[in-house]
Image (cartoon, rainbow, N blue to C red; front, top):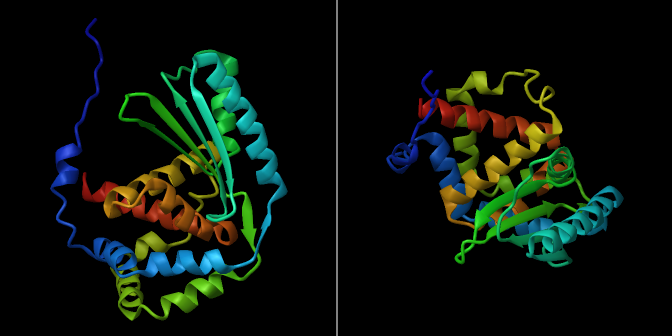
Length: 238
């Protein structure tokens, strides 16, 4: 029997995207126009408290990360950042292999107990695993702050309304978000951070720090928006 091979290359298609549609214009105004920076600054100024569950997850994942670094001859660095109001763990490894039940369960725990995981290679070709945990929670009505900042960007508000009118089906209520398991939700959030970073040239860490703030108080709605965007982009490249 012949091997069954599935292979597609989308690199050139992504390079050829013209970036002239409404969604691209929204990205451009939100980033270059300063909306994301203004929103991030507003979030920084809000009083915050430590989320006990996030603190417990961070300490657990830091311990397990230290074990992996020892096992594979790597490095580990954990930071609870009181300036960016987040917790991160960075694993620098010569390789990573999750091949038995215990290792695969550990990989699932990394997904379940964090809010974002990024895998990338360093200049020296070592693997860097960046684990992001919110850790802090703002004491404020985030939706009210978001709307108050948005009012200062009438062009962005108009584009958002235009996008809604152009794509009414994307905003219809459905059960897609409710049917996502924890790992799929983490995967979706990671996709969004990577996509936003690639579109704006901002670092994944800064994008995650700014965007994931919104998910703390409006988690389901934010996931739905990310799903809508993912479906749109996938439809554009079919």
